[in-house]
Image 1: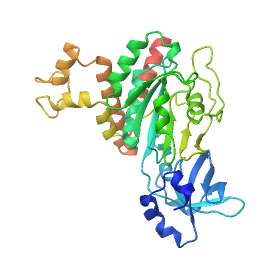
Image 2: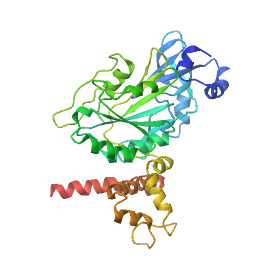
Image 3: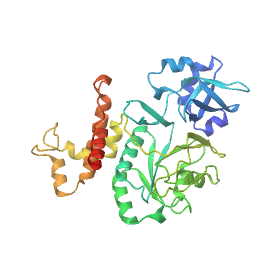
Length: 349
């Protein structure tokens, strides 16, 4: 096996999937950049600009089947000039969300990941509800999620914030530290290296680029501060896979201000395993957790062992995924968006 492929995590599964393409004089390559319609791929001939073949575009049922950052592909790679991607090999993992807006279309942010670092600031960015959304999609991706609470130095109630985040993280590892100084983030170094791919996801301004520089040990990403209103600045404007000198890769992504659900039933069950366990204990299998007798969820809400906000978040995510399953012609505006607009109208009045 070529050393560069092994360094990027190539294994027998990809070798088997690529075999039918070998006779067509195609080469294995990995997608390192996606920016609008632009692609870059890494192959045995180095890094090339590339484009997606027309047949591949024609056969794709949705944009989620087209090349994404981290994908292994079968491509025709010339000595010089543009490469042509003919096929996407089956993915080991994929972090997918719904595109922003009301269209039920998947957006693949990164693929073939070993670890997803969900980065959240301990300043004004801190949001337990957003953390639940990230974790749901991360568990669904089949990669291992790790929660990173950054900006420890800016936390106003550190112990309480960490305790609340840990209760939501459940089985996901959680680290607290400061990317600027490196404090508390030493264990993350073990996640990066030969044959491993790590992606960083979070809002703008949480310190993803600074954390990348810390993990790589060099200033490979531009960094910037937050705005006066506390919102982050977009220092990363495209999804890009950074190939590390010692092997492996890190995927940095633009800040996500909106984390909409895609099909993630297994991820939801993993993130909310406490709520799911209560729901299975209800007297009736079709319990709506409202006024039914013998409702374990309602009892937990009443005695305070299940926070109202967490239950409401679980219901909301279920509703969003139910909307995605409806036939396209019968979909209205997602309920969460409708309520949001109604709420804005009330506030304006």
